[in-house]
Image 1 (cartoon, helix red, strand yellow):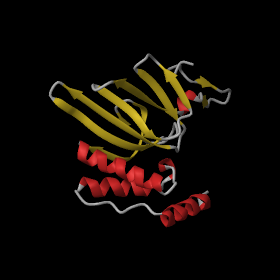
Image 2 (cartoon, one colour):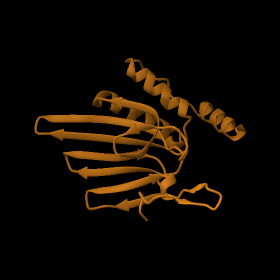
Image 3 (spheres, one colour):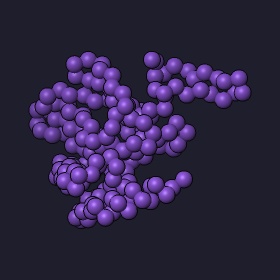
Length: 173
């Protein structure tokens, strides 16, 4: 299916959106020790292999995923970054992000290996609770972003927080 095909119109004038157009697409690249883009967590619903080094994974609106980018040259690391993003629906506003089409709601954006490593540790801590990081309350990832950005220690996510989030999510219309 062509991701860039023009939408078709219904008889009443509304535009039809294909399933592919309603997804958030992330281009992943892996060139050992040069460019490494990967998804740390998230439930992709489609995958398209472009070649042996590149593929595109796609996420449904509302799903949360972590996108890690790392690159180096002959002198060392030049990019070390992690973004935790909520995929958006076609009519929702979004922020743009390299290698993510069209973009998403950025919950966390961290640069620099020491801070990226702290985010990866926070993800590991969530998984140690037997909780999928993609199901964590979005406010937690915002909290981790805010605390690490100013050099403070983020509070750990707890099972009680998660249970409260699940109840609140169920109660939302």
